[in-house]
Amino acid sequence: MKLLVRLFFISACLVSPLLAQELQNRSIVHLQTDMNKQWFVPVWSVTNIKSRSPNNTNLFSGIGYRQKTWWLESMVQHQWNGKANQFMLDFRFDKQSGPWHAYAEASPFLTNPKFYEFVILERKIGKGWSVGGETENVHQSGKDVFAIGPRTGHKLVTWSGLDVGLSGTFRINPVNSRTEALLYLVFNRRLHKKQ
Image (tube, rainbow, N blue to C red):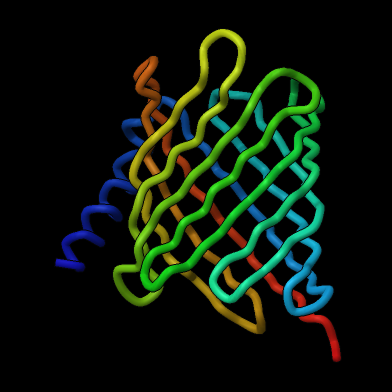
């Protein structure tokens, strides 16, 4: 059964770019520099390359708190795109519970009246593989932007504290029936404090 689920999600990720109205590549670098066992300094770099919408680059930094199975980050975000520079507050929560993984992000804009949210729920189904779903939304004056769909992921490399993962999703906006296919390339690195 697990093999069938994997094949279904892999096939969906391979076929979805042919069906999507917009393609997007999201390259992500995430560093956590420990201050002690619980507190750390998070830094993110997220670049979105899109086929139809304006590209953007985002830098984040702030303070983070960690327990055994979860972490929480509070940051300031600066986004550059073709239209304008924007500043946001950004709050991220990540929790691992057995085979289940949950991630939630909430981001109120400081430069205009918008609120961004992004949620992932996924389950490990084999060595390095996970399947689940995600939603990414922007609440704003006028028409909100919604996107929801299935996702699959695979951990490519774990080496010397560096984790590299590749994920894909096919999402639909139920308001306007617009579809998009996304490919995430994620680099995670935790920098431990020297004793």
